[in-house]
Length: 417
Image (cartoon, rainbow, N blue to C red; front, side):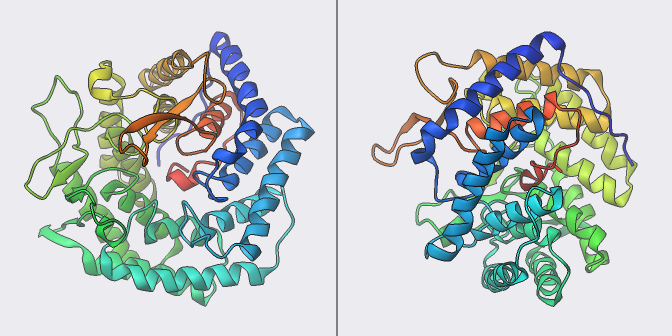
């Protein structure tokens, strides 16, 4: 098992980070209309999570009330909204995860089990529908439900659903060679007609590292352990076989995607794609399988990532968690907790400084915006964004983690806890 420490931000930067954190807390309510349908990643559920942790960090009752207000909106939506959907990132499963999380940390009282039993059954039905379509995507597909199911009592519905998830992955795996497995990219065509033509996805958010991280969460539950272990080790073997050694100028090791024509796309440095997410998956696998080799592989990827200094290839131009400076700062912070390497702590510091430098004086939530596709124009534009995944709430949660003395579980939906 790897050592867990709790490094802290330097005193000088702590003041700057805390100032930004409080500005985010003050300003998010002004951007309520920018939130997406109560969801965990882009809606009220995620903002509630931010205010809960801000309340625990600062002890100000107004933040606790805001956390509860946003939660009540989500609970009301469960009974009144007909188009919430079920996905973890954008629907009922994510709201259910938040309520369970609040019960576990003592922020709300135990809820009526019937609410969760209904969600359990909806998830079970959705998993049965998805597993034949390679729809494993950890954010939008059936693997996203693992975070919710992990919290639940292991009743028949939950256990059967987890068994179906394992079976779905087992049946759709591709045996490349002995003890080496991969999976074809998530079938976005199921949702979008003009989906990207990817054969294999190597990002934590949507691809093989996400599968490894989710299976590592399932393994301690004792569900089909041999199959789960074989898929973890076989997935790691395939992933590391894709490592690049000839691109020292770009510095990445694992490509982001492999396209249908065999092209290996370069990898940015971020949570969603890149070597940092792969390192997280390796460390999760090493933790449950007690595999020192995986630890050292994760260490090598982490330390190499800490050397990446050229933003031409890092491609980080915004502050958020998904593919922004706060995400990299948080990942290096987490990796440093696991590996206790000074280089990772310095890298986290550097990315927080870069995040602060990205703030604007004329726009954004506390000066932060996210670059998103503008469906009206077809191009990309800057938007004010209060969400967890790409916006200010996620930046705020990242700051709280590095300033706090406690282990915080808010990043479990990102496969980081």
